[in-house]
Image 1 (cartoon, rainbow, N blue to C red):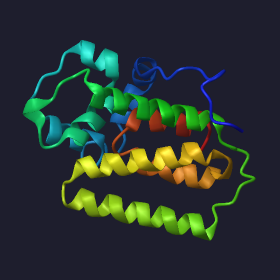
Image 2 (tube, helix red, strand yellow):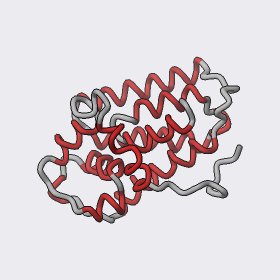
Image 3 (cartoon, rainbow, N blue to C red):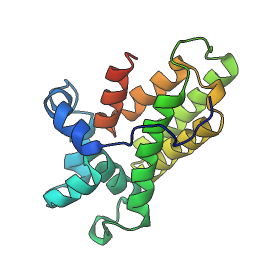
Image 4 (cartoon, rainbow, N blue to C red):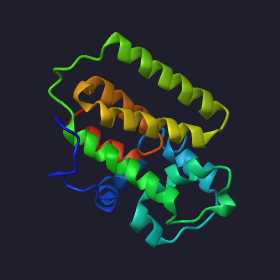
Length: 181
């Protein structure tokens, strides 16, 4: 299947967040090691208008702040970096609707090695609190998946989403639940 925008329902973060708000925030690790932890650590006591959440959504705001960390004071909503994060989440949404979810493709040893290297990089930068790099690696992997979607297995995509869930809990939960991953 080719990766295109045709005939794919657009990503609607507001609808997803409204529907999943209670279940995502009640997850066991949400406030200890999940998105709630990063929300408190990186967003702190800063206030953001409801319109920002309506325009971009929690996942986008958190990933944007991580991407711009530690420059919290200089954040500019609506700039090209915010749009890049929003487009990244839209890409995740589109990939999920284009891959072979029948499980016919195998998660090959070669792809497993690449994926483990990806996880090692994520862990390294997370420990160093270089959140910009963490987000950049997720974006790079999504771009790679979009280019080679015909070889992306259900198992590999599920592992990617499970790892991204810490930083983008709403979109990943919606995809995982929708496709029973």
